Image 1 (spheres, rainbow, N blue to C red):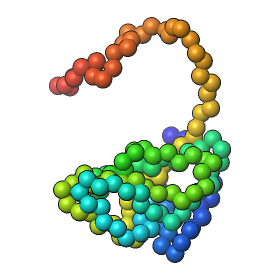
Image 2 (tube, rainbow, N blue to C red):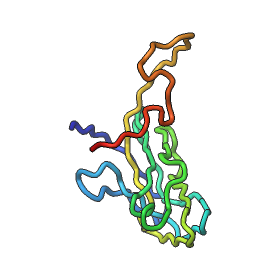
Image 3 (cartoon, helix red, strand yellow):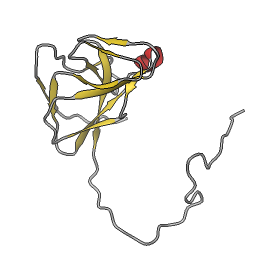
Length: 151
């Protein structure tokens, strides 16, 4: 698999900020750390400070994705997953977390709360039409291909 390299500038906005870090060389995402101490009550969601902002090249986006360990062990996930950070946004990156569990969840400064995955963006032209090419599937969606078990 070919990897693309590109520089992304990061600005730390306060002393609690941490630069996102990949957990391993092959990891797709960069771990994002909380820039604040807070508690997420059961069913509550809020924007969690990270204390940093980004500058990406035009044609890039950063996607905010959940951490599987937080979801599985604590029922905490990114509400608008994946969240998109556009290349022209220069404000603080905040992570919208929700607590789906029945227990309060404490978030501490420096705790990994999400991950950031960078993607290339395609600029396309949407062309209005009155017809689309036919396919075998057609307009079938939402489970229209059925449930299949591999034996």
